[in-house]
Image (cartoon, rainbow, N blue to C red; front, side, top):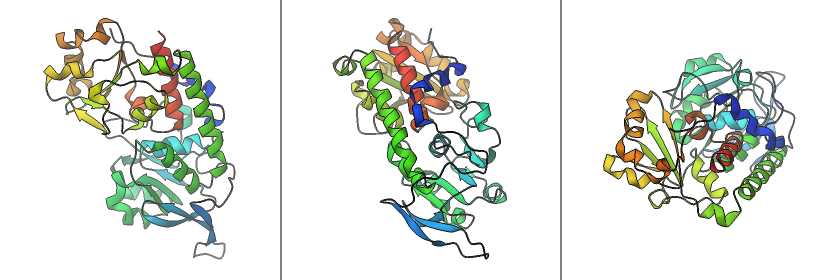
Length: 336
């Protein structure tokens, strides 16, 4: 039977994050002040308006230079990567959008950390009126999700978009930190992750042993064919950081490929298979595939190396906190 780590155990892996998850601030409050001015952000003037105009800074984004508050206090995030970045940096956003097939925000942080965050609709189709009611002073998203509504979002508050999400999650984190004026917090987070990666590699027997692994990633998606995740995504980067090998069918420089024919199941075999379900499992056909004779004939399955994992963490947690939790789970599973 596939094995899955209980959700309550997820945060146990955070012990090695160190400064990666900074002290949380109350909803609407900013984190501790970071150094102002960087290669992509610099001190600027003040926002026009009242006599007590808000000081602003210039930040380089996928849409060009954007003037943002020097000390943002009411941040709205419209995708899961932005949520991970903001929470990792110690902020609690006033609003956030959830994945369309999920009932709530990814809960690998725990309900207490997510308390007080108001829903702004679903990712890729946010509720602009709900966002406006929150009176944000900064909005974070990416062009893949919200490029088409950038002007509408910018009319509500300064909006910082990265080009896309997933694969460039490390660079996106730096952009998010710059927008929040938290550049000084970047190094503790990234250094903590690098140390965690080194520790996991050592625990798996070193780089040579890691390269001999063939780690398969499968995502069952509500109303769609199963997806085989390749290298150009969040998890692909994490596996590459660990020097873990991938099956040939998943080693290409693409995001994913669809498994359209059950006869192709052999393409997802490896030394270990990690699979998750997005949305309704019945509509995703998870049980049908996992219960099939073709699935049961896979080498990883026969070796009891097929593991069910949390979709909200593994496939949506595109940030440093999510990555550290995935590292801890990978270490636990691959050493079991």
